Length: 267
Ligand SMILES: NC(=O)C1=CN([C@@H]2O[C@H](COP(=O)(O)OP(=O)(O)OC[C@H]3O[C@@H](n4cnc5c(N)ncnc54)[C@H](O)[C@@H]3O)[C@@H](O)[C@H]2O)C=CC1
Ligand SMILES: O=C(O)[C@@H]1CCC=N1
Image (cartoon, rainbow, N blue to C red):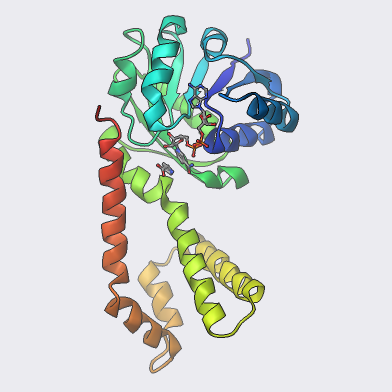
């Protein structure tokens, strides 16, 4: 029997995940999407060939429901879903800060809920999806969530107590790298390089550094030391980064993201 997966709230992350699942070989007929606006429904049908239905139809038809609305829209969505969602559905919530307890308390008692924090590199099959089970999530539910999210990159299981930290580091993580690239491009402009050349230089430095971080097995400090020649250019830059508190700023920024994630389940 086919296992149908529905995306409830198919915005940026929902569409990134849906596209990845299609690339991984799931037929469009196994996927359903829900949206708020008719133009969005039309665009999803045209781009991916998936059926767009109402939230109630998705809950009645699909075996797994992936909730991908904004945290602020989650209470209204759960209220709408509750009367139509039998307790044998696997409910996966991908919203920042929304706990499995928050979802469980609004659905039929006993419903298995899994919390997953993916990130947008799902668009290029390089996501990291952090997975935690709720009260009624058995090993088979976690394995199913892993199988679904493996199709868009890597997965990692963590206890739910660490999900807000994972959201701050990994869910939001790509944004920090884009921010760094923006700032470095500005530096290139200041130094007189054309914007497109500066961009290409930085992106290739980022790709090269990422592959070395992933594949060399070396500690980041070792990799940085190998770039930092005595009396050279890199150490002049590092001194400025330390003087301007960039390390402390990153730690404070990520701590703020975690606090924001924690606050999103509060009424
Ligand atoms: N953008 C990202 O990098 C990541 C986002 N998330 C989480 O995913 C969720 C969605 O984020 P985005 O995709 O960035 O936002 P988005 O605004 O692009 O997508 C949300 C979509 O849900 C739709 N929607 C809202 N209420 C609905 C309802 N009742 N029925 C049907 N559709 C409804 C909206 O029209 C919108 O298209 C958030 O909870 C966020 O925390 C998680 C990981 C990464
Ligand atoms: O900024 C946000 O709230 C979402 C969750 C993680 C990435 N984007």
